[in-house]
Length: 283
Ligand code: PRT
Ligand code: ZN
Image (cartoon, rainbow, N blue to C red; front, side, top):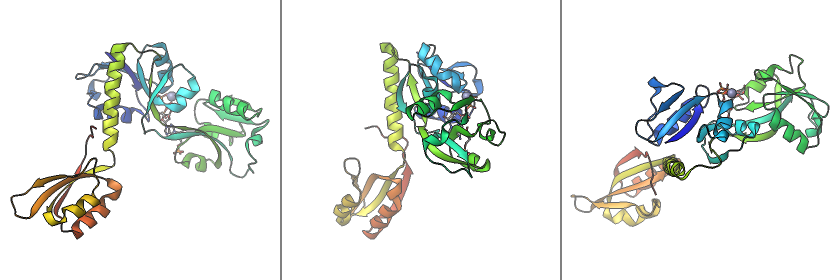
């Protein structure tokens, strides 16, 4: 049994549970409590505030956690980053009033900066030899300059809309963040095995993203050209059809190339083209 800490509510909750479901771990939302067990995989889910996840994983109270890289960096806990998960993308950035003229990191010398990420900010300031006052506030950081609490802010930015709405501009990006899977520094062998199985499944699910499965009927004479158009994982699958001179061709293509490939295939006589979603690709 392995215990995974995930955010109980908030921006990462939905995609964390969606990821667990995608890799075949049954997460029963209706019975969600502080701690719940998956019915079909040796996993126990611990629902926490995101701020508590790095510490709980570092102490071994949970074996794994799904949390923003920004929280991991801020807490500085001893955990292993096992996998970047590709959702919850954002950045930790410095922003200043829109009208101010930015002259580089030394702009912050002697200034007051409001943030909920004091450790990451202090490390950045130290690395750039800048002395500034760090004002730690836990919410609504973006209103600090207008409220006269600070000259600048250091906060999470995603679309940048919040900065614009508060007449601020982003001037330095300090950390690119996304949700990460973290683990306790030393997992016992049995737990490592469960983690390896999860990572294998995550890889298979990720491999299928942006892919489509194509099936079509094709005149046998066009097969050589079709194989050039469709360089699939190894090569396209070709199956005979009852109709004389025709075959059925199956292949996987990138979604970004789909319409281009379909056009080329139609030009060489493909008919009855079916485009299907790919759930997993297991290499
Ligand atoms: O209750 P709990 O403590 O668990 O949650 P929380 O309120 O501390 O965190 P939550 O749910 O808001 O965010 C969880 C994680 O999502 C963060 O730690 C980040 O890793 C990630 N994430 C991704 C974001 C954003 N995008 C985001 N846009 N976290 C916060 N924001 C906020 C930001 O603070 C700012 O106020 O959204 C605003 C900026 O958004 P834009 O799009 O206007 O730039
Ligand atoms: Zn939080």
